[in-house]
Image 1 (spheres, rainbow, N blue to C red):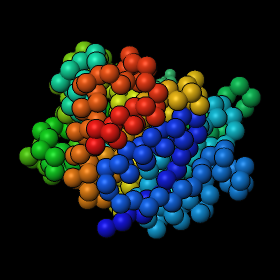
Image 2: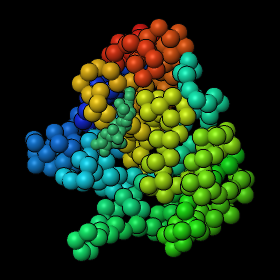
Image 3: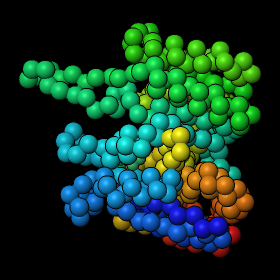
Length: 332
Ligand code: NAI
């Protein structure tokens, strides 16, 4: 069967890592027809829209997309294309499995946790205004509906993947209403999953415990902003942003992208590690029911990483993005 998948090359290192991953997927033998669409600045220059209707239509039709990172201007300019895409397609769950890859040096070994980040609300609602000069207000939106939905996602994910525990992360001691509602919603859902242990952490203490002993965590469920921050922290535990994949999931649609951004500091230099997007693509292959191809790629990736002669710079090697991709394709 041939799958049609929307491909968003993105900005910065996006085109480099997507090209590398497409090369590996093609070598895996899985039949994919790619429908390529720009997003962000490039799309704006071509169509006057950062998130073109044609792109959204393509994802709605295909139900699955592989996405490179898209740059969001800081403190000015257009609003985030990533946030816009997640909202437009109601991709309410951001799933980020964090574990040690074979052959990758890391601060910790034996890390195996899953971050489930609420993806549609919180401070990412982007509702900000200047009250008076020198005073701005940013609205943190938390709803019972979205909190309950993400909690069910986390517990179901735990159950289906034989995981033991879900920990909700919050700051309800200070934000008693907003984080309080999130926490209360997760607690209510937890009572329905008596087979899964449930516990809670305040976000600051959770960060400390994650960098001291990450092994105590299993599935983490977090509101949007804490999920974003804690994801990067957890990537740092296992070797950095170059080695953690992710998926944005709705009820029908999946958009697969790495945790990392467009990395302007190394863009265009063929230095980026495509592993993170490759791991996202592996999640995509499982999602579209191609587990054999996913397993083959994981095996080839493991072979290249443990052999250790072809590594990108972030993992202490000298290989370029494409040299690494070619090595994985060859191992396939
Ligand atoms: P970043 O994740 O792009 O980079 C942080 C650091 O990690 C940089 O030193 C970079 O070189 C390194 N890095 C990231 N990915 C790497 C890879 N695959 N291989 C090797 N090194 C890698 O974060 P930053 O600099 O804060 O954000 C840059 C832009 O990306 C911003 O415009 C931001 O809004 C956007 N962004 C987009 C995301 C998305 O499209 N989903 C997610 C996060 C950020």
